[in-house]
Image (tube, rainbow, N blue to C red; front, side, top):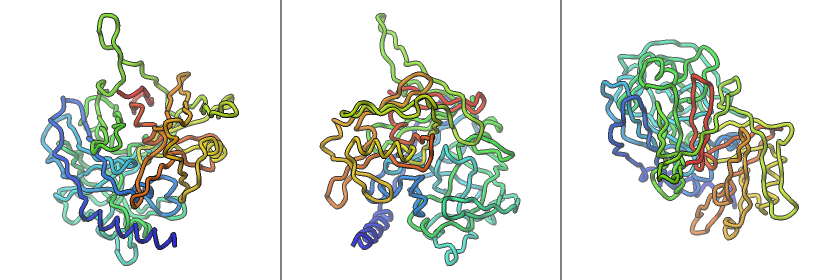
Amino acid sequence: MLIKLLITLLLCNIIAYSSALVSENGNPDPEPGIIRMTLTRQKTAFEQHLNNAPFLKKYGINSDWLYKKHHKPSPRTNDSIAMFRYLDNEFYGTVVLGRTGKSLNVAFDTAWTMSWVLSSQCNHFKSMGCMFHNTYDHDKSKDYKADGRKIVVPEGTYNLSGFFSYDSVAVAHSNISNFSFVEMTNVPNSYLFNKIDGIIGFGLQHDAYQPFFYALVDQKKIAQPIFCIYLNRDKQSSHGGNIIMGFIEYRHVHSTKDAANNIVYDPITFKDIKPGYLWEFDLDAVHFDRQKGGPLIFCKGTGCTAFTDTSSNSIIGPKADIDEIHKAIKARSFFFDKYTVDCDTINKLPEIAFTIGGKNFTLAGRDYTIKMTYWGIGVCLSAFEPYESSNTWVLGGAFLSEYYTIYNIEDKQIGIVKAA
C-alpha cells in the first residue's frame, strides 16, 4: 500500500512540476565587486520530503530543481546572480554553458568541488536519469575545447560517469572562459525524478582541479575571494535568500543599537578550515537541553568536526547522538531516515546549541522542524538525520537559516554570525 502511495505521489509531483516553473526578474545591479544570487523557494510536499540530501542518496534520490531565466551577461567586473531555493532544501540557479544560449538548472553546492552537467551524449535508454532534463551539447558551442579524460564519481551505492570538457560559463552579467567541468553521460535512473541538470561546486580546491568560485577570482570577476550565504527564515516566502560573492552584506547580520543609537553588529566567529575540499571546522560540543534527565552533551572533551552543506535542510550527526535527540523529542520513525514530531509540541521542544570557537549557536524547536502537508494532513518532520559517523556533524539549511555564513577561500576560514 505504501509503495502504491509513493508512486501516486511521485506521478502527481511530476505533473505539478510541468506547471510549476518559476521565473525571477532579478535584482537591481549590485555594487562593483560583488555577485549576489537571490534564492527562491517553491513547494510540492512529497518532493520536499524526498529532497533531504545527502542521505537520501543511498536510496538513489537527489535534489530537485526548477527553471529560472538567465540574465544576459555584460562586460563588468562585478555582478549579481539570481538564484532559487527549491522547497526548503536545495539551492539552485541557472548558468549558460558555452555559446549555446541554453540555460541549465544547477545546484550551487558547498559540499562539492567539481562542477558537472548532463551531457547530450547521455543515452536515455541506457541512463533513464537523463530524461526530461536540459543537457549540454558541446557541438553547438564555439567556445568548447575538448579534454576527453574520463571520470567516475562514486555516490553511495551507485556511480556517475562522464568526461572532462572546457567551455565558457555565463552567470547573470558575468562569464568565465576555459572552465573545466564534467559532462556526465551516465547517472542513476532515479535522476528521472530530479530537475537538476548539474552541480556548480563551491567546495575548496584541494588538487589540480580549479573549482568554479576559484575561477571567478582568478579571472578577476569579483573583488574579494569571499562568498556569503543568507537564508530567509520565512519558509512560506518564495524568496529563499541570497548567495553574495565579493563582500559581506551586513544587512543580513544581526545588530543592536548602543546608547548613542549607533548600529552595532554582532561579532563574527571565524574558524580555520581543515585540509580537504569541505568547509570543515572544529566543533567544540553539542548541547541538547532535554526537559527530563538533564542535558545531553555530545563531543565534549574529544570534540567533533562539522561542515556546512547547502544541498540539504538537514542537520546530520552520529547515529547514536541523533537517536538520543529523537528519543528526547519523542520523534517517530517515518521513512527514508526521516522522523516526525507532534506538531503541537514544536514551540515546547528543547533548544540545541552548537559550540563553535567557544560560542554557542542555538536553534529552537521551530528551527529544526519542518511543517508540511501530505494530502491535507499536516506532518512535522525533524531536520535531524543519523549517519554512521563517530564525530562529524553536517549543518544544512536548518542551521544556515539562523546563521549567516562567510566563506574565505584565501584565508581558508569560515565565519558564522547570527542572521538578521
